[in-house]
Structure formats: structure tokens, C-alpha cells
Image 1 (cartoon, rainbow, N blue to C red):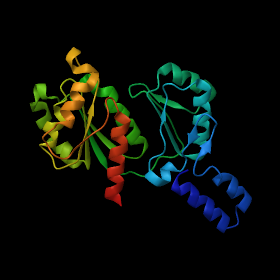
Image 2 (image 1 turned 90 degrees about the horizontal axis):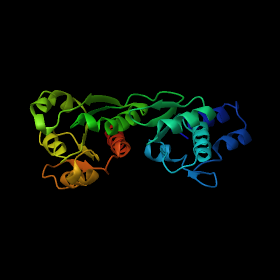
Image 3 (image 1 turned 135 degrees about the vertical axis):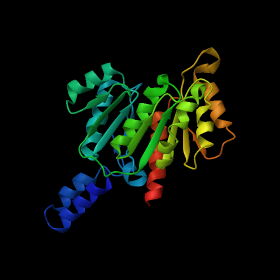
Amino acid sequence: MDQERIRTILREVKNQDLDVEAAYVKLKNLPFENLGFACLDHHREMRKNMPEVVYCPGKELEQLVAIFQAMMHSSQTVIGTKADIMVFRQLRDKIPELRYHDRARIIYWQEKKPATLGQVALLTAGTSDIPIAEEAAVCLELMGVQVQRVFDVGVAGIHRLFDKIGVINEAQVVIVVAGMEGALPSVVAGLTRRPVIAVPTSVGYGASFHGMAALLAMLNSCAGGIGVVNIDNGYGAAALSFAILNSIKA
């Protein structure tokens, strides 16, 4: 339940276009809706500006159908992350309005595009990091954020990064996605005054330990101004970026 929808309901009551009982029916699921197997936090968009996002793995098809239908009834934007194409196809048979971004593995629906809110520069160390970066990018774009993508500028060819300093400094927030040894966020944070959100990925050879090496490198960075999210957590980087941008706006 987003703020504008609630304001619309209240205006309709004030103008006598909607009676109190009908308004109650529309508002009764605040602050959450209990589906039995899930309690949907419809109030989150009012508290945090970004609506609750559905983590798709581990949920049965019937559960996902019920969750998406309920959220589509109460919000203008619904996002499901880490969704395989087969899950999307099964869901689309039940809810034809749903759309899918295959690279980001995101299922989404949007009734109305939000107002534009700031700009994020999104960097990847390598091409293999792009799927996680796209998870962050698609989440942000659905929330009205402009995303400038800068892919494959890792430290193995550091001159590629220097060519993009202007793009980095034009953004309010910088997201840096890297696997292997996870060095790129430290380099970027040493080159810009913008807040840097580091995203370790599970990309790399054996001693990368499925992203643990990159995660520890980012946590141990000597460059200031870096926040680190979990391994392969593109959505987490998007949510933190969105919170920063809303703080700037406020």
C-alpha cells in the first residue's frame, strides 16, 4: 500500500466519492495481510519507501500465486527475485500480467511508473558479474532510479576504469559488483567521494570459495565510504542505494 494510494482513498472519502465502509475494506490489510503461510508487509512501502520484495526460491507455486496476487492488489510495483524461467512460466499461466527479466532473474509487475529519483552508477569487475548487477539495476529502475551501467572494468585492466570516472562522479551512489578477489570496490572508493556499495559475487576459481574471498576483501578494505552486502545480493545493494537516495531527497 503506497502513500499515494492511501491519499487517494482519503481524498475520495473527504469528497464523498467513497463511503467509510468501502474505504475500510481497501485499508483493512494494513499493516499486514495474513495468508496463513505468509504475512505480507503491505505497510513497508510507507515506512521504507520500497515495497516488500518476494524471494522466490523455496516457495511452492500456489504460494507464489497467492503472494503475487495479494501484492498486486495493494501496491503499484511488485518484484520477485532469484526466479528461474520455469517458475515465471508457471506463474504467468496463472497471472498473465507478470513480466520477466531473464538476466536479472526478476519477475515483476508495475501498474504505474514512479517519479524519477536520482542516479546510480553500477560497475562490474567482469562480464560474469553482470547477472547480479542486473538484479540491482532492474530493482532500482522499477523504483524510478536512473542506472548508468559500466561493465567489465576490473583491476586486471585498470585503465578501463579510469575512462569512466566522470560517470562515477555524476551519480549520487555507486554500486560495485565483483567476484574473484573482490578488489574493485576498494579502488573505486579511493577515486570518488560518492558512497560505494560493494557486492561480492560467487564468481571465481576454487580459492574464491564461492564469493567468500571477495566478501572478506571488501569487508577488510582500507578505503573509506564502503558498505558491503551479502554474496550475490544485488537486491540488497539496490535497497541500500534507494534508502540513501531517499535520504538525500528528504
